[in-house]
Length: 165
Ligand SMILES: [Zn+2]
Image (cartoon, rainbow, N blue to C red):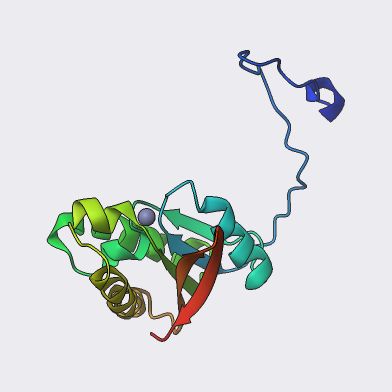
C-alpha cells in the first residue's frame, strides 16, 4: 500500500485501520542486545541512551519487569530467568549476538513489590544484581562484551551511570 494512503491521522477515539511508520527499515543487524525493565516511563530514555549514547541503533530488545533482576538468582523470578536465557541463546545463534547491555533503573517496581526491598538498600542490591546478571549472561552465552548501567532519576531527567561488572 502506498504510504500516502495511510497518512491520515485518526480522529480522537477512532481506532486506525492501518498505520505506516515514517521510519525507514534497515535490515543490517547490530549484533547487540539490551536487557532492561519494561517500565514504560523510561522506555524512551533507554532507547535514546542505547541508540544515541552508545551508538547502537536497531539493538535487539529484551524487556520484562525488573530487566536484569531476573538473572540475579531470585526464586521469585525463576521462570523469567529460564525464558531470558533461552532468548539470549537464540539471539546468539540466529542474530549472532556479540554484545549485551544490562540496565537497572531507580524506582523499579519489581524490586519494591516483587522483592519487597526499600531504599536506601535498593540501589546497592540492584548494582550487585547487575554483576550477578552479567556473570550469568557470560556463562550461558560465552559473550565477553557485557556492559551494565544504572539509570538514575535526577531533577526530572534520567542519567545512565556505568556499573563495573
Ligand atoms: Zn522497573
